[in-house]
Length: 450
Image (cartoon, rainbow, N blue to C red; front, side, top):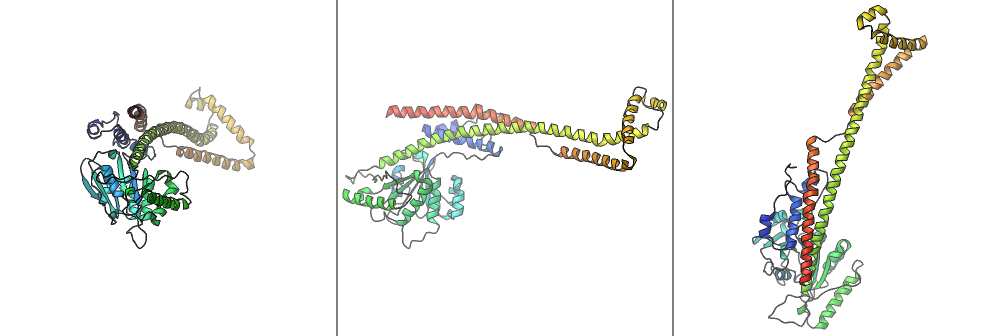
């Protein structure tokens, strides 16, 4: 990590390109994770942790039978004709519709670079040739915070898809924040393929599912709409995973001033659902940022504590190794020296080592020779072998303790960890509190306004 831990500025570009507080909050949270120098993702990887950067937008997947109005809804929400519409099966692949600075149409690998977290799905399902993205500059409604995933129109019968469409839609749905299921009242509402995929999705992400009767203004009279809705609800409730109480299916259609209709249009509730999901995404992102900061701080504390324990353990191992080395060489030296000293007369030994040391050497020699004489003569060979084995054991233990050392951190590594800890506490957490206050202020302002 860099020694200079000032947060990198994200204001110049963001303030000019981002217009809503929620968008700026999600963008800045994303930057805190992905910053090349001080990003939490990079920081966590050095601690053997795996963090995922939060998405800057929510993902709304729209599925349903062909001609159910999926593409028409996206065009209406974006207020731009992006997706082709018609009675034919126009959408045969997956199209990401998102906002950007320039109108672009992307395919295959280029799309994958925008959404790398979908790589396992795309590579496993073989969808690369059926993947595209449409980037629009529209800022209508909450589009700047939404990525729509337009899925292939679903039909029964002999229709053959070039990929596992059921598995692909299920996998995308598990990654999405919302799943809109559009039922066309004009004869395709009870498409079994649609019902089967919905049942599969409900097992893992039932809380994301939202059901709508699309093109409700084309369903004829109110009694016709009610009959179609009852058929759909009955079919859904027959499935074990979908027989829930309080089942809702708002009627929606694209408003057209040239074609007034008496049918109740609840398309505004769709927009409210998207906005609510955005607000939840902001809250979850801020809460997850707090949790990830705590995880990194605790991991750093544990790593530093473990390093201190390793240092103590290594000191103990070095001491034990040193003592064993001393015993391995000192005992044989004393034994051999004692027999050599016994060959000297006191005056000769005093002249050789000095009168102060000679008495001590004679005392040690006396103890060793006394122990040797205490051993029976027929057991002295065994005693020598045992003594040699003991010295070899001490030598073995000295080498063993010398190898029993734990890896410790270098001064540079400890400095980096301490800097990371201070950066997370002083910069990231402070930034998170500021963003949270800004979000609450925004919510209060919207509440007061409403």
